[in-house]
Length: 309
Image (cartoon, rainbow, N blue to C red; front, top):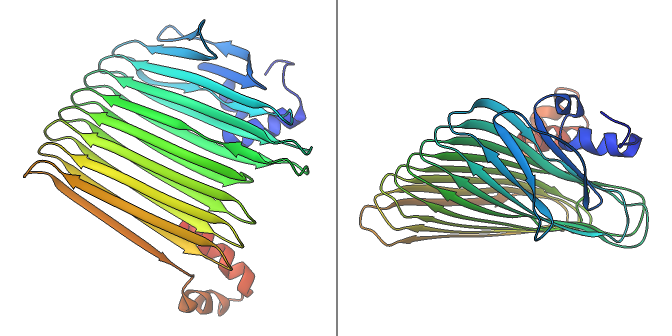
């Protein structure tokens, strides 16, 4: 990496996106509201927007197995950073996009990043999108992250999103919207852990408009101490389609989790399923691990880490 990042920056980048991987391929690094480093390839172009903060990413058709990194880091307390990123994925392209935001806040003012991402996938294209959120710092100012993701999938395209809230995020509202054409596939897996008085809310809204379109959304969460989490999903089956929505949560202490899965069948051939399970760590699981020599705290950590893998 160039001299534009310091030790704090490198730590944040390592938490959300392996810094070693940034040395090759296409990337755009954003720090404290400004792009500080960028690299393009022959097949992936990154254009800075002129009307608002953000970038337009163009992936050429038939691009195969390339990587794009777009990490964001905040180290200034009191900063409210908003960015608009649009992804245009060409026909039959196949790429991996690694995003995420890390916030370091050592002061009393709140720091916030709101990333608005739109994905436009052409026919037959395939994208895997990995996003990690992380907060750290000794200050009393909150670390706030509010991502919005909009997805438009054309015929036989597919998008897989893996979203992780690692730790340290005080407040987040995560909203995902999608419209799917014929044969399109949309898979979302999110894993969230909250502690203290942290609050996390997920809103998932997808419309299966094309025949044989499908979606599978999975939310796994652990809420401890006095934290609160809420999962809301709305899936509209407007065709001969398939959908599966599931929310699994572990709660500890005085934490609270609310799950509101909703499915709307507007076509007789729509096949829609939703599931929700919320509960504490099973006593027999703790006992089994404790008989192997672990303390109760170590056993709890082992179960939670396995649940969020």
